[in-house]
Amino acid sequence: MSYGEANPAARMSGVGASSPHPAPRVAGPAQAMVVEYERHGVWVVAAHGSCDLESISRLEEALTTAVRRHPKVVLDTSGITFADSSLLNLLILTHRAGALRLAAPEPQLQRLLEITGLDAVLYVRATVEEAAAC
Image (cartoon, rainbow, N blue to C red; front, side, top):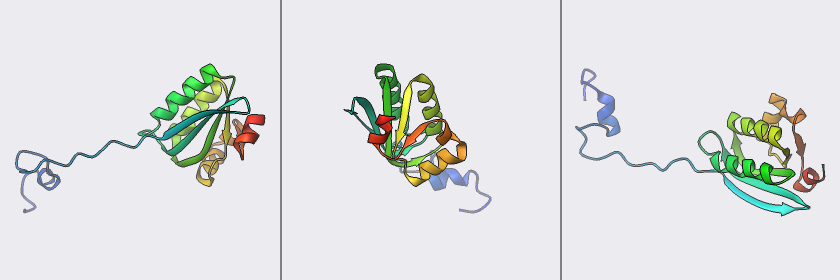
């Protein structure tokens, strides 16, 4: 292929009529896994995995439902491996809608909460038990 050839990107990526092989299909982003249970009279939502724009919908649904049905909700964040502003936005909206507590943030999430000042707004505790008690 020469530099002067029209639309070299289409050939290299397998897109377009000139390609004899279709581009491979890639699965969509993995959703954060969510587990819900009651502990010490408080509803706990435990999130596992990445929480970003592409993967947060399951957690959003669980938290939205939880704050409607339960007077106090603890989000166990110990299994969150990555978080961005999508999670921060969800935390703020959930906090406004009901009594949300955060438990066991890993260092990356704890740092994100500190940098944004959300650690001063939200109830953040080291364990689910401590979060349930406050």
